[in-house]
Length: 296
Image (cartoon, rainbow, N blue to C red):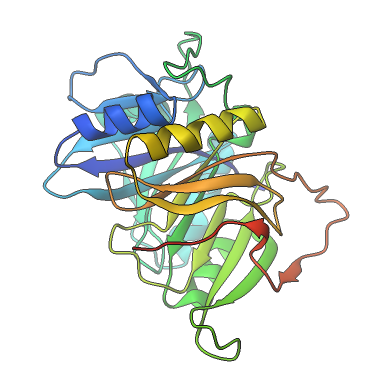
């Protein structure tokens, strides 16, 4: 597959200070080096950032940064996007430097979600040290985690991610939004790319005023998750879902509302399928236990 991982996420903020407290004190991310552009770089590993919080007029989700393995793969994806009628804007050297990559290009998926496609990851080799004592995060060639994005015209968006970007199906689920199991439902399509994560992008046929449904970060131990859960509760952050275990990707996690309005899933133990023998599934439940939802 041409795209190998979710490399980073860009976030917009009217005030970056709440993000520093939320990300560092609660989630246990490490603040990166001070930047000339004033953005807050947040680290999960030896990359200069995995989350980049930029000052803006609104709070919300900015873009996903999708990584290609090399320049040839990057050019091939961009050629397919252009052939499909997508408006592609090539980032200049200053933008590439700000994203710590060799080259990148920007475009939107059919649902309007912003994508920054890049190759040439940079690292400064500074060790990750969590200010909250998190043992570490599962990243490397698996990328930073996953992102769930809104796509009201779900079929068009799925076709784009599969036909143009080269993703493939992992799972789908339709979750009723009322107590009536035959009533309205939200459908989510889970898609994987060139790494072992169960999904790197998922698309949901629901609105998301913040620009995203959630992003997921995967810690190295179950204890990391439990401690983060109680830090989030103690700090008074909205818990969107209590501790639980998902059915399809086996992640043990909880969900907490971020300062941008979307949720962060903080998890551990995600299933890594063998794609050479995997057959896509249709799930009928979202969790094996727990994950009591509160979307307020």
